Length: 223
Image (cartoon, rainbow, N blue to C red; front, top):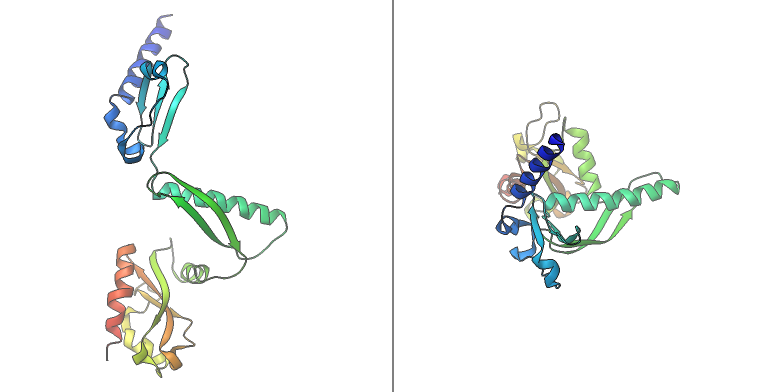
């Protein structure tokens, strides 16, 4: 009996600490405003519990949640997209499909608050995202680094050869043997006629990858 009493006291203390103050739940509810409970009877006899990722208002009368709110982050959005893509991939696999699958999603709402994945589609082909991603995975040892990939056009490079393009970029070209450098060029067919090609910019983080494409790369071709 004594052990049960001590356990109950310890559990009660834990719950009181977890829900110490309604102010601690601001990060889990939209705009810091808690949902309204329409029943005054239930609202009066309730306890607010706050955790790092969510908050819940529990009715002492019914011993059930009156409302709950989850603190959503970019990681939560990625998880939701991954879950929906996995379900579609599993369904296609059951149907016998084998091959590439590039997923696109339509998300409604606030990625930092309430959101909903409205639908997920699969393009059964190599796409503009899967090609540079797979190329990078084959060239880089270890985890995939932060990067940005897109096509670029430099009219002043029209008529240039790939060899000249590589010479202008110099040591900034990525070397798969050493792991040094930040740029990978591909789809260079339109280079000679239009000065157009695709590039992967690798960075220490996403900001650095963006900086490489928008600021560092153009300086290589100033002439």
